[in-house]
Length: 279
Image: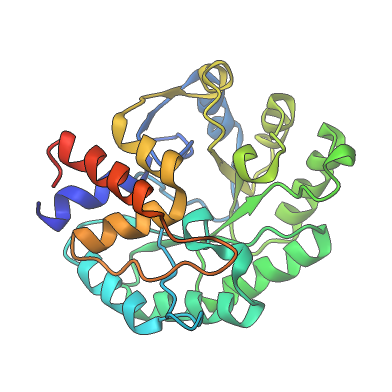
């Protein structure tokens, strides 16, 4: 299978006036139309297009494998992507040091054409740290900040607390902010009322909603389900990295405590691909 046909299976796609809801294709929905219609960001971005979430390849010793990262970017250059998602879940961002986070963004920024947008994860547990990290990511070349919900004190993360957090971040951010809700990883869902409230902020331009709750997604955006998305749900980042290796990309190792696929999982993953005609 050609690389160009594999890559879109693991992507975020932005449609006109619609934030990215998950690593699958989405179509415009009523709430999200109002979302961007109400917003007038100081730096308006045209987010339409496809954004592959970059993985962070690691060496067998656990260090970031920058050579393999560069090789992936070289291969992606053959495909007309609108930009890239850096330091999302597939990038194993929580396992990177601050220095590694900045280095990855800088290298990606230097390697890709200037017209490619970089949507970069900058969310931290505290508002202060999120603001500081967002500014640092902007300095390294980020075009928009992907800010995940703080979750360590999830019992205190009420709608009011989250609205305050995101408002403070958006007020201070030199680049547009994209909300990021991924309860499978954080155990915390960004409430609908918070999303609708935050939609009014001029520097909050979208949401990446990865919770997979059909009722919720029906309210926020009409989501098109497909079998491809189930691969990353079932096998996680290790499964995605293995699939990349099969198709000529550089997946590399995962960083502990993530474990590599077991032999049984590897067989199941291969079966999923072969039964769908991808291998």
